[in-house]
Length: 218
Image (tube, rainbow, N blue to C red):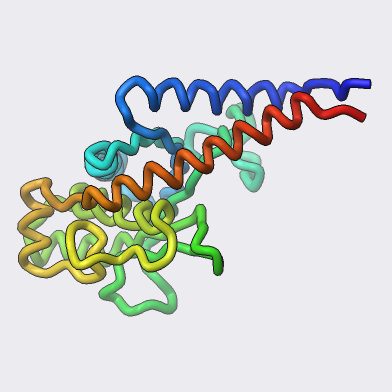
């Protein structure tokens, strides 16, 4: 006897197929990122940050769709979430917090990776980005967007993602800040290829799981 096909399986299968189709259109791979604005960053600054992170990742052929918890209800939402639709499942989550309780003030963010190098969650520290924007006379949204892209780079690349070149450098000095100002602080070609490969493998695995569920029998 065939198992009944649930709506969640249908949604998951259609999502995988549509994402693969979009990837074939322009060679880019697709990821979704939920943003938690715990630091209450202004909508203008956050929007500019997302645009910059989008541009950086798209240059690496990774297309980003941003989801916002203010517009939907997560499983941990309170009564204020009543009347809102559930948040769609996301590949990654970025939480913009005021600062870190344990890390030095010079740290811009942190990504949470397992022993196998995989991870889905990262924090970005608003106060550190603000101090850099003030001291280096950079746009706050631009700085925040570069930091968000850097942390997503950790989640997409896995362990040992730091590099001697580009946006994944562990420390940004005068040269990196000048590239940031000019919009040229980007991922390398090698990092772009690795990110695309990992996203493709994850998409294929999810698609295979949906198909296996679809064809399961009792």
